[in-house]
Image (tube, rainbow over all chains, first blue to last red):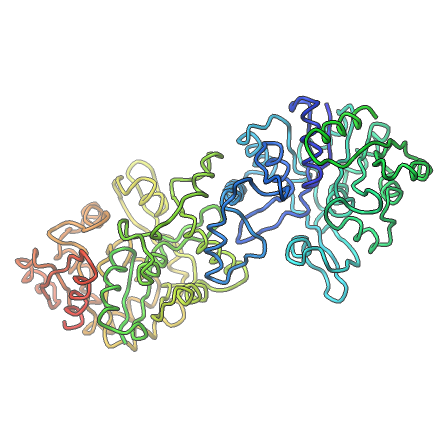
Length: 306
Length: 306
């Protein structure tokens, strides 16, 4: 059994490779819900959906999120009313949010709904939200104050400087059913190549998860989302710098050292392998940039081999 | 100034005729919200939307509700998840519900949102919900117990016998801003040809409205939705019978007599004009069946002439 901690696009692409080399029923994905958002009264779980859509082969391959062949009738109509359209929800994607919101309204948990959606997409891996409670990644923006994750990420295209990040509600949250067991029982725990601050840290902010992962430290393998000092996608490098961290694989190693035994870094960073090991982690150097599913599968094999 | 109490399809068709013979800014429609429903977390106001879509010339002329040229991408996708699809929401129609739900979530009232939507549709008449509070028309069904309006009307296609009707929440509701003034200040108050039990009675269930209308009794003109003992559309005749009322224009006259000075009935019921007058109302006989906008305009002119 393999357990993976996952954010959105990068994690989903890695998991797609992992499922090329392992059976779905051997894999549990614990997914960040810190960027969940309620829009128009609908509960949207972007990272959970990105993971499901990707693994179901339904994702928009170009963007890495949303559905392939999506249409935008609802959003186009919403523009007539001057409605909230900066977060564009596709027509078929909306069906996911209608279903989730309806079931939550009936008293189902986010875990229940996520399992139901995954089943509907024909998935056989376990997709677990990190928690069934509401945890909100919030960002303190220079000269503005605190804003929500999607306000930062989508509305402002993560282009404003961040002073601090907070995971509101995390202190009162508990890991979703199965999360701690999946970490304890796995032969290895993989930290996917996701934003350390915005995708992985919210998962660890849920009390109990960091301790459970740290307890498996020797079997924990992380894939660095930073390659040659830059994020492959998104603002991971900038936000690390803004928070006073080093936006290199060494910075990632320092962040992850308390609970990670091995860090997988890209060949472009081979010269930093020694510095990573100096932080007390094993270091594996291998190509980590996934242009397609073949490279993702090769990376997954390398991670499992580490 | 003319004020009309309105349900859904029948009222909307009548109002469309009225706007052929009167300016929009002279008209206020007070619309039933007893069949409002929360679906997938979205606030749906079917009668308000039917009135707006119809008056904006955007309604599906065949069904009398929903939008012309509508698509069903979201509902079709929702079927994958086994989601709630018995109440089918079209793609462009969904934009209305997303907007309404978002604005209500921001703290706007249903009156605010309705005015904003009406403006977006280019309407110049005032469309007022009967109340800004939640009032729910609920039906006690033989052998089943109480169910919600849409469960009765859409899901069971109004084909189950009704023992009683209740307007839950009405006792604690107050008329929406402008409702009592629109009734007091109008030169005439029209009760549109809508279901007396399911569309008009919920409006009167809001404390203050019946008194206000009764105070204008001499200037109140109702159009019977019952023609030759049958409803032109929907279950008005059946439900009146099930509740022990006479499903004829005389039954309507008895229901409306406390607050209505004049009842407009169809030529098919000309022989019952005397019986209507015996209930203490003036009776006007005229063609009331609206096959198109021309007949609706002629009917509106007849009502205003009465």
